[in-house]
Amino acid sequence: MLAARAACTLEQSIQRLVLASDQNLGHLERQAAQDVQELLRQSVQRGAQAKADATPPVCPVCGHQLSRLSSGHARTFQTRFGPITVERTRGYCKRCRKWRVPADAGLGLEESAGYSPAMQDMVALLASKMPVEEASTVLEHLTAIKLPRATLDREARRQGERAQALRKQLDAQAATEKKQLELTLEPYQMIIQLDAWNIRERDDWGQSQAMRRKGQEPERWHWVYTGTCFRLDHRGQTAGGRPVISERGFVATRAGLDALREQLHAEALRRGLGQAAGALIIGDGAAWIWRLADDRWPQARQRLDCYHAIQHLAAVGRALFGEDKARLKAWLKPLVQQLRNDSSLKVVRQLEEILVPLPAGAIERAVAQEVEYFHEHQERMDYRAGRRAGEPIGSGPVEATCRQMQCRFKRPGQFWSLKGDEALMCLETFWRNGRWHLLFPHTAFNPARN
Ligand SMILES: [Zn+2]
Image (tube, rainbow, N blue to C red; front, side):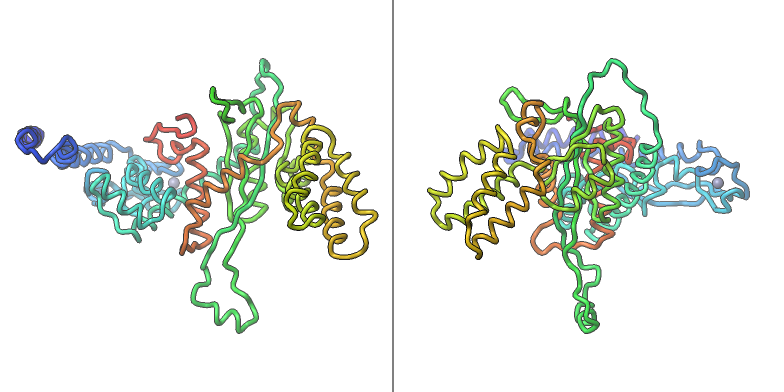
């Protein structure tokens, strides 16, 4: 009946399109979706009710038979096609000592305030990709569903918190799981890259004055520790010569270095660290990177991002030649070549020779500081060997990841709370790692493979 009416309305829309000179196919596409919306909404409601009725009265958490059953508990929630109402059965689980509604678990509603899985999916994706005010408008434009930004924000966070709980579970699994050794596998190296960027938060918003009176400066900027890992044999080039990595793991967390260490280790294990012939850590000069590497992956080799080393060479040049760009360039070029293609030891020797005759003063201090930097990282500058082995000598991939994440999380006028940014970043990493379907099983889409 309803289907016949929808078909009839649709037919009229087609007639209208043919006659209206100011309408194109886009008008029909939009109208057609509207014409069948009610049919779809009612079909989905009927399906949801049938599924709820067919759900056995057992506890969705422990599997125990529920007692004190009562039916007819109505719940209304938003779906892709509009709001629907489902009547469910409620029962008591004696083992968990909790009231349960098994149909909610069967329908995929339990972690939502009133949104169907397809809605949860869309909200989570939009909010992790763009500011909520924009997300709300985009959602309405694409689906005709109105969701106020505060509601969208709350639901996205809820999904982010669910993602965090799932990540914890997956990370614990990765740490204990013994992966089946693939015997035919060629030995490969695991590359792990680390970097950090900062995010602005206002958890203690409005309390700045009070905090300052107590002698505390409110902290606004916080580090987001970011890591990426991939197998060296998964790194290649496109036909056009652009470097690509076919499979890559991502981690980004605002929850501190311990959180990064555990999350990145689990991610590296999932990507094959346990079977790797060796591992290589690449990062800039930041001390936390090397402390973490020594602590978590003591067997791994360490490499300083080559570009950062070159910047420090340039700093020596600027101390020596000041604004004389031509002399600076002429001095720097052979040293950079030597660093990349020959031996970092020779470069350090030359810097030492420059330092010795310098009279005490600002120039001498600046050069001494850089010589110290090169001494500290000497072992991490095996660029020639790295290039010969076909390994990366820079941390470009992780820096690109940081830049991309900052495009979303560091917009003008944007403030976060620790809870909010960690939740949305967790969603973003699920997406990047190709695990979106673990959160939203109805989606087979894997962006990592598309
Ligand atoms: Zn139970």
